[in-house]
Image (cartoon, rainbow, N blue to C red; front, side):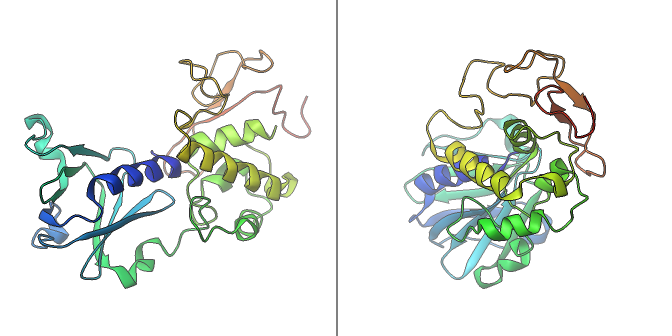
Length: 268
């Protein structure tokens, strides 16, 4: 699943291609909005909140989309069309007059809402380090309100902090030397929040830095633990461990850690 930094970068790409333009074609190919035409509306801006993308139009309308595991966007220059094999996957078409066309493919979430009602679709989310209204104090408060919760599970809860997905949950635990099963009561929450915010911002905005947590862009060495089960830790050489899924996680996501760099309290 794309994380907040990925969606932030996507918004920047769509912003460059669409913002300020008038739609010559605006189709939503989902049952709930199949008869809603966006033709003639101006694309005002693209904003994000965590993993959610908000495309705002004139007329007080906002297109809310979410990629989840399978969704993607592609932008095609004027005069070109997407390959015929992907046509059945198209859920959104946004074509700018005399400009490019953006196609949303396999988007599992496509909502058209009044801009004044955006809180109906994103109001449940926690603070986002990539937004101007970011509050580190509120993020720390939300993360710490359940002292017995596992740190990996807390970081994945978008109601507490918006934008961290499984890659960042695992990598932040490594960088702080915390076993992912550690209870929040045993975590320096403000320091974790500060590190996470800095990492997400750097990944979202710096060229060549997207989700490179080690500083090394070589294949297989971009991450400390995520996706490296059975391989030697890049810091100490111990074998990286993996758990099949985070307990209670509906996304059935895996958890990786180094047993030497991230010992669980009470274990050797």
